[in-house]
Image (cartoon, helix red, strand yellow):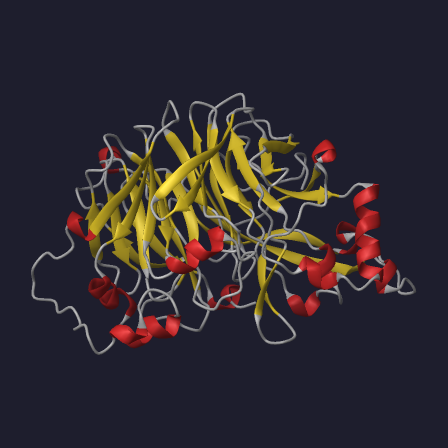
Amino acid sequence: MSTSDPPPDTTALPSLLPLSTLPAPHGRGPSSRAWQAHAHSSPAAPLLAVAAADKNVYVWSLRTFQLLSTIGGGHKRSVRCVEWKDYGNEGGNGGDGGEGLQLQQHKRRKVTLATGSFDANVGVWEHASSARRRAWGGGAAAAAAAGGLEDAAMGDGVDEVEDDGEDVNDNEEWNFTTLLTGPDSEIKGIAFSPRTYGANLLATSSRDKSVWVWEEVEDEEWETVAVLQEHQGDVKCVRWCEGVTVQGADGQEKVVGSRELLASGSYDDTVRLWRDVEEEGDWACVSVLEGHEGTVWGVSWEGWVDQQKMPEGWEIDWEPRLLTCSDDFSVRVWKRELSEQEQEKKRNARINGAGAAAVTQRLPSILKPTGYFETWVEEARLPQVHVRSVYTVDWSRQTGLVVTCAGDGAIVVYREVQEGQQHQQQDVPMAEAPETEHRRQQSKWEVVALVEAAHDEYEVNHVCWAARRDKDTRFEGEEIIVSTGDDGDIKIWALPEDLCRR
């Protein structure tokens, strides 16, 4: 959609379905502003963490929509951002077998939360009580089946926690394990690296124009590995490239397109991509995405594909695209363009049957340090619905749907629709087919759901997808949308069922 295209007709769009409102614990209003929410990925830990202006983090149950914990005392100013760490499940497919992976396997049963604050500090918290986790996940059997938080051997040795009416969710349940300092100003964004990376990394963005990258070298011991200072304004957000999880021919889950690549969006109207170009701690900016005419508030990597519609051997070429949202009211899709040298390497790999190498958790760099710069171009713009700054964009890893929120109080859901056949000619053998971007199906984006004044007269600060965990879940794999606003409330929304299923 170009800037001259007329706005879409949204009068007949379905609305989101309100499921629950989690009220601000200390009353509504700016002093209780809810900045951001993040849902834990494990079925055994149906938890939602909320960063609040009152210096606290609130942990809610996504099973019962009840407040479980209030985490306070770690920060001196508002908590701006939160993120859970996904350590993966025992026996899962991940990493390169290095020390970083071993550390993640060791900690797979822990519940770890990172917090970023206006006090310029980052906190890392771990839950202290294994027994209490059982109440979150529905018992030892459910937790053991999820393969994550509980040790199955504990099932007969630890009693369930009973609700005796006492407040058992005090701050002592959370250990403040690490305080990371270094940035000179407020932390705007925070992101743990995916479980598929060979190292356990944590990235932050700050108002001081910097991006920091830390690595957990030993349990609860973090070291700074990079301070990236090429942005010319506040850095609003950071997000790691995770790739997409697919089902292999052997029935096992595999990750395609994952590589250690970090995206950051800034007040300078650009997005920068960063990686360790020599895999020895030499971090560099490998691409600058220019085109936005205002602050880039949010970024989100593509994490879902419809395998049934993908051509044979698609894993060799496929790389995730990137979504960005901005002060200029636009939401844009970016894709990587390969150089002729990179295209030749792809063709050779396909001809030689080296496709399996593309389905890994930590891809080796195909570029040498002397030529590491990547070319990224704008592929599409989503229909412009918002009339004020777009604060957040989130690309569902379950359905491919996209959700945004803005200062206009609206929440909008988009869907990508395939329009035609693949670009490749029928008589071109797969081994000689052009690169991924030429083999993508033509597509367009459309608006499929909209709710206005989602938090009444207040701005919506953040939206995200989360797996639905409550008793009224309609089908396996259903997702909900979680929104946070200046009123301090957290709202839970469902989509019409036909939009949830893909």
